[in-house]
Length: 122
Length: 129
Length: 112
Image 1: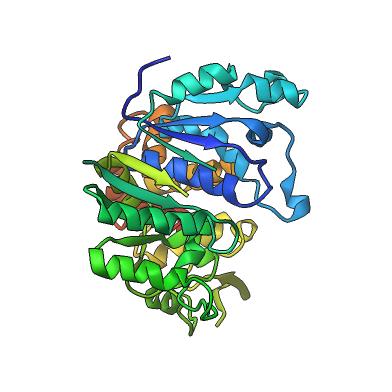
Image 2: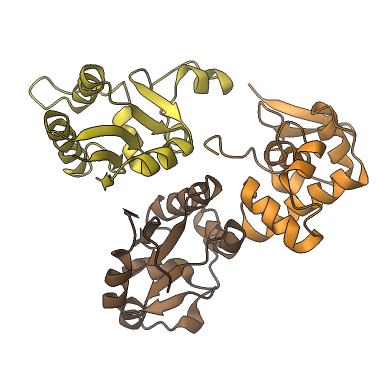
């Protein structure tokens, strides 16, 4: 884990289709990176559902925006973290997720957030 | 002394957040700190809707934002993508889409997310409501 | 007001700026028509980018912003093609804007 004092942390706490915030969070993350801002992305609480494989949101009339997570490495976003406690509480394991994310405990996540200059949460 | 920017992602009537944001902003401009800018994103763009008709015995949040901007020169920046999705349109946005109505006017400004990136760079603190 | 592109006797719906409304309406034969609106005559090099951008969209449900397009192209096609000078030479008004249009993709978000 690298020191990242200048970085922006984006914290995702909502399920993917609970509102529009998960999609707008991803759009913000991509835009910030496009403007040269370093970004770390965190998934905690219901936010971990955003990373589930086998989503089929078109049947509820929604855009499959979570396919975009797999493109984050093209935006040089490598710091992607998921809360291990949140996964466990929901009966999920890292194998249920569509992409590799570092699983960290709640305490590790709060520690890491301290290294970020700004935090935006959705 | 710090430079502070606000990120508003809450709609005016959905929680206390938008009201708290305004009170926070009013406090900052009275303090020794600098309010660099206010950026409206996601549901927060509803704050920029100039067609909000607030009953006279309720707090007029929209008018208060405008007053803050005009008196203290603090920019009120609205993400164009989040806003147009929700019917918050400047004259330019409306014309580009053949629509006759506009809902976004000065002192609110329709801008890109690059402006948020600038605010993040130039502020010591970004506070989200 | 409705906007559309006449093609082989069919009317294909577009937005005001000429971007197709439905990704599935696109076919390779449409690309030269869309390119004409951008004053671009498609070369092999253009096609490579157009196909690249379209495949990117189909895989990730989002068109690449400039930074991602450059990196993704550099990784697959090498740094001679994955750089903004090369891409702007092919699409002078911006690869993100013009290549997406020719590839039948939605108009990119204005906030980028």
